[in-house]
Each structure stands twice: as C-alpha cells, then as structure tokens.
Amino acid sequence: MPSQPSQPSPPPHRPDEIDGLLGFLEWQRHGIRYALDGITDAQARLRPIPSTTLTLGGLLKHVVATERSWIRTDVERGEEEPRTDEFILGDDETVAELLAAWQVEATHTEDVVRSGIALEREVPDYQGGPSNNVRWVLLHLVEEMARHAGHADLLREAIDGQTYRR
Image 1: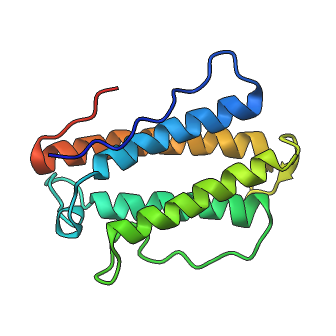
Image 2 (image 1 turned 180 degrees about the vertical axis):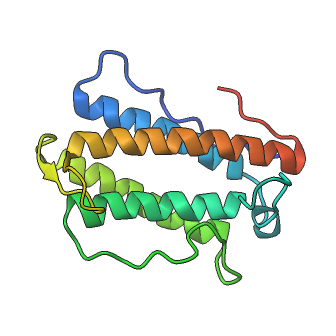
C-alpha cells in the first residue's frame, strides 16, 4: 500500500494570477506523484492496459520532458534538448531519479514565473504556428498535467488497485 505522499495545499481561493496558475499546476503534479507513490521501477514499466503501450514510468518521463521543454526551451528560449523515446522508461532510468528531476523542473518553473516575467510575453510556437504567450504556456502545462494525472490514476489502478481520491 502506498505511503500517500503529503497533500499539497489546495490552490488558493481568490488567488492572483500567478498564485492561481502555479497552485493549479502543482495540484495536478501531485495527482501524478500520488499515482507513482510506492511503485517499483518494475511496476513503472508494466503495460497494464492491453490497448495501450503507456506505462507509469513512461508517463513520468514525458511530463518531466514536457515541463522542461516548455519552460527552458520555449519560455526562456534556451537550446532545445533532444527528446527521444520520451514515453519509454529506459533500463538505466528510475522513478526516483525522474521524480527528483521533475522537482528540479517544478522549482525552476516557479522561479521563472515568480521572477517577474511578463505573462503576456510572446513565446514562439515550436512548430512554426502562431505564437503563444507565457500565460498560455502555463495554462497548457496545467491542462497537460491534469490529463496525465487521469492517465496515471487509471494505470495505477490497473497495476494494483490503488486509486487517488482528493
């Protein structure tokens, strides 16, 4: 049975825009972390739903890469890192290492957003489409984490019956 990671504070009531965006982003990250609590690396590699190749470990690897890419590459306009086998937990990768890497990215995201960056600042679309802004990127990250928190909950339940209830 999972140890149930500490519950983050719910997003604030009547937040300003920054606290609201970061609060909801963290709230959704927690759903994914919760689904991974107590999972072994072997379980994280299981494909418990026959119609998909999605695994908890691959999902974790994806959200780490996604947050890193959107903030470090797109918002900060840094050098793009190659993203290969993003949904596959490699034999040399562990859940603990990826969770630690994700915490680094989560802290970095908060630091960037709280640094005074303008939420209206243009963020070019990496696929050459219309540009976005920092606010859009943060809203997209909330949406991305929420969608994958649902996936993670279903995968965890298929592995050992554990579910997350807020």
